[in-house]
Length: 621
Image 1 (cartoon, one colour):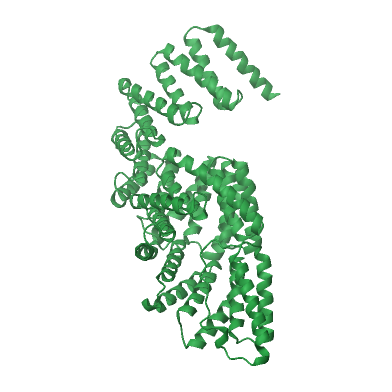
Image 2 (cartoon, rainbow, N blue to C red; image 1 turned 180 degrees about the vertical axis):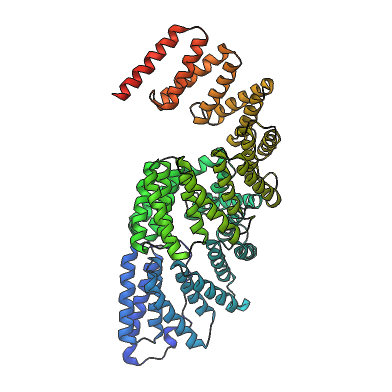
């Protein structure tokens, strides 16, 4: 087997020859030395890790039997076996071995040296991987305090800085993670250069942290630099390159840069498919690393709309992670949430609700009601209720719980707090509680303009939503400046043909149309349709909606000859892509019938009516 991360081989502080042994023990020493060398070769090779584990177990058994527990080669054997256990995810078995090795070195040297600190890093890793963050944090901090400049291993020290920063990121303690990540990147650039793969990985991780903090302008250059450098250094399909691509994809998706996100996502899927095949062949399906890759691929299938493929993989992930780590482990909880999201997207709402509730119960038992992940799952359940359209009051109750907790724990300006407030405002808008929606959106917008700036994608989105409240509340004039600001900001940030930009154009067109400003509305409607035809394709759902909007504009202004080809195109495309029995297709047919009747084309209207009635009769039989 060949490990996926660079493993620093622990060099014993002394040669076997310097350890005084009786002459009769020389054969035993040689036997154990050769056994340990074979284990080391297996660990660094490409073979079956199960066979390597068996070699390591046999080597330690031989060392204890022939040399005793306190011999340096026995310590070496313990260390080798611990590494295999750690690699295979058997952390409970790795921990006592690492502790024994660490105690041996500390006793030998009367305290910590660079060698014992390297062992301690492995032990801290085990704590972190076993979901014991407090113990991992304390040990990482102890290691960093003991690591001295004269030890001459700056790369190793920066590895520990990275690990501690990762721990803080995982706990969403971004204020603690940020200075460590900045320190790690500066240190790696100085120690290894800007193009070293380790430097580039750190740059990608720091970019992802900036993204989590809402600092997109800081994130973008780092993420783009990291991906380009890793592609050149390691190739496009290396796991580190794929992880960097995943981080950049998140930025593109957050900013609505669909034309850049889609090919990157498709490339990621191909890379993850190759990685999954390799891991399944080498380690089997129930290995932790295999399941991680399977989970990533399942989520990417879901983003591509391949719901069945996503479900197939995520069902396996949930079963495998649950078996390996237990029902209440954070990874098992996350697997439930991921599968629930797929069920929700597939309209299997009862299955989605069941999984969200199971995940929420486990999360509360393990971490309490105010933990960030507990609140995230509660928010997801509220969104599920909201999307059902019949459980608005259940959604409102949960949103209020999450909002109050996030304001208390994270603060009123935290992006997660603002996201919940925005969700609650959107719920109120759907319930036609426009005053409540306006109040919340105004609070969110003021906070975002202050903390993120007026052109941040989240700020522009809130402007659009607040404008939507005014539009739906009687086409109020307050909507116009918000729609105009949103459009100008998106044109600057995303370009004139981005789908979010075109949404802003459409909003302004609808407002002008509502105010009878037809001369201003028409070119905007046409711009939306032309842009979506070009960017999203002729059969995209947004393109079809744009055709319907322009057709309705012409019909309502008695420009029937211009409306006719648009309605006919709409019917033809929806029938081809959705089928004649789909509700959207039937609604388009009804609109075309009405148009034909207004034109006095009774034969065409009657023919379509008969076809519609026949389809309805066939469906009802």
